[in-house]
View 1 (cartoon, rainbow, N blue to C red):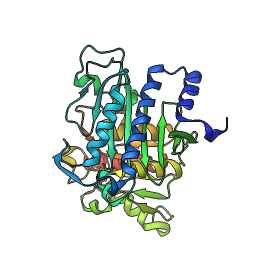
View 2 (cartoon, rainbow, N blue to C red; view 1 turned 30 degrees about the horizontal axis):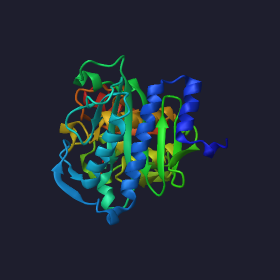
View 3 (cartoon, helix red, strand yellow; view 1 turned 90 degrees about the horizontal axis):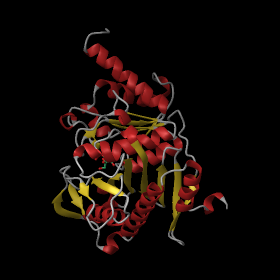
View 4 (cartoon, protein in one colour; view 1 turned 180 degrees about the horizontal axis):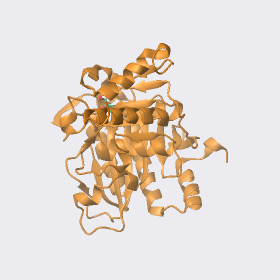
Length: 344
Ligand code: P6P
């Protein structure tokens, strides 16, 4: 079998044989891939399918819901609740934890997902994605409580995303590296195209919403200013900037060619803890980035070690090439030590 002829399910079967991963995990990851294919299909006809535009409703984030936010969420629920291996689901688009309907067998996995991330880009036909995180419980719980799902990111057993771009890709890690699959429309299957993605240690690009510069903390302002100063500045080299307003697209670029993505805490978002959500954005992306040899930080802590306190909790996110994330963390430490007077 040639490399790219291996389908996603064949890869999972092969990995299970090699890693003896749980059969139920394979079932769940297959259901997630099916959901991603269905979302891709919903997106591809755009304005022709009368699925663009917004609804009158808002999600718990206080964000106006796009028609496709709700469509994608329903697709994930229908395609995954049926799998018989889930105890519960958590979605950006649902206020409360989703209990698996009684007509379906339950299992010991929890699926946490953002069904359509970057959906503000849909109406302008720019790449969007789905992000998912998987937890494995010790057993099938008698009841689902917040404690069931509020687990730190280090406990994830799998994470991934689908990127709905010029091609539809699914990028996955089950803890044994990061692997990319491209949707082959002729057979309706994801095929292995990027085995064992390893992120370059150094970055030539940074991604941040520069319109928020006046709100940033001094360590972030210094980091960005030093990148912008280029070859005559402290970094001694040129940096390029990217901002797609679609985290999945940014992370995919960084996984493949290095870089750093920042959505830091700032004066405007500090009351809510940041912009991006811990359980179904920061944790899965940090899991993938670390599996690819990168790092994921809040600026003051490893993202995967943050102890969740609520399902839709937000955190600062700095992730990408290890050397850049480490530098940004050091700038935060220096700033904090000066603030409390430990160093001058
Ligand atoms: P801003 C999309 O809404 C998202 O959650 C991420 O995908 C993206 O990186 C960020 O927010 C964009 O934020 O400030 O550009 O609207």
